Length: 165
Image 1 (spheres, rainbow, N blue to C red):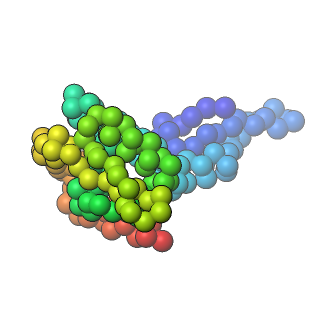
Image 2 (cartoon, rainbow, N blue to C red):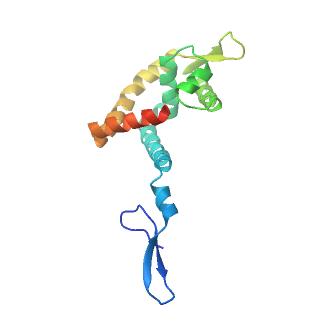
Image 3 (cartoon, helix red, strand yellow):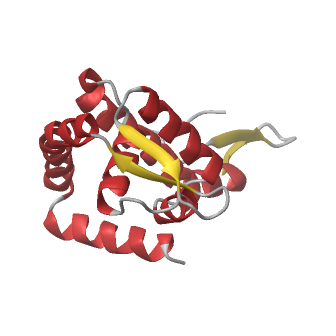
């Protein structure tokens, strides 16, 4: 078994009973390499690491940054609604919010309706977000430059269509 120079498929060298060799591509491996979901997951991990590296010195991750931004844009909204806005499981969002509460960046309180909790940024959370936005913006612009305007717009349109489907 060997991998070709393009890195996209695995090929097998198969020998017939007469000793001649032929090369056969593994269709499952090719399908896996061309899978939109697998490539999206891989790319998301790479991009997350890249953005995390940009903001690591601020003591938050890019996931926590997205939570802070969502809370800023939708203050006093129930955690269930916030989770829906960023396509995150409620329990995962709650864990992230609890970390931000311990860092004194978010205030969580009862909504007054059952067990629902609402979130609001603290003054420190607002200040940190104001400091982070230029770093996030620079990373965002770097990626768009790398993709080119047309490719970036096409990719964003595709991602939005898939995220809403």
